[in-house]
Image 1 (cartoon, helix red, strand yellow):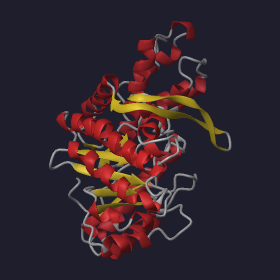
Image 2: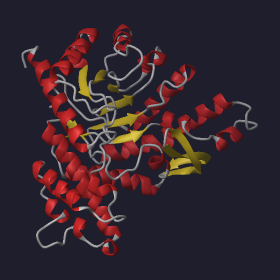
Image 3: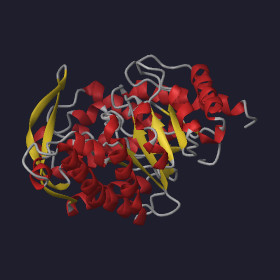
Length: 381
């Protein structure tokens, strides 16, 4: 599937189903149970009977006080199967597990890193808050973290025969979003050389957290891995550090592994010329919801002779409006023209569809797949 033109994939996260969001904390409403069963049948999930059945013994039918930790873990596993089946049903070529067993990309990852500790809760925007961490020691991936990502991949692999793409939050973003107490102390007085401290922290995170995890996934049989770097273009002066962190992280990959990087909501021009030295083989980039003409960044990829594939974001994750297959086709064809080679174009949403309700996410993915099919017809496929 990956060898045909315009392969399709989700970026990573999908919204947890309604029944999982309150599982074990609040009584399931009858309409929520019915919705879970309806989606299970629609997506041909064999395990739907474990959630609800005629004998009333399903997970969603149990009294709150009787729900165990094992039940909670099984509910997450079934949600993972739902996410896999949704992506298969939509027709995606490359998929993962919708990150159903994770919370979010930053603090979830930080909890698996030695040398990081919670520093408090910050307001990101509106009513959205996140837990910020401090790096107060040398960073390394914990045994618990290594085991989790290996187990997560193995479970997904057990439930699909399609190409899987495990996702990891990248070194640059993890450090950029954290306090750097340890590395500032190690590089002089607390505020003496922030730039040097940050570079040291980013490289250490790449060497001792992301690279070992990629190596573990390689050993477990992953044909592809994605590093998520939403903070990549935060500081133009640090683009060299960002690219070096990618290359050091990807040293954990086996030779034929597809090495993907997800970038979003940035001015990608800031990454040039250093990104030309990256060993990434695929960039998934947000295009539909951006203040500047992001498609112009494609001219730079071509100008610098970068032969990595570009995953063109053709679905806006911030609206319930369903993009038409024809609009998606046109965006794909524009990207192919600007890159000068249709084989360099891949297709994806701007970012993870966790922001959308399952029915909206599914409709958007189906439309995206149809748009890619229309684009292939223009090249005789």
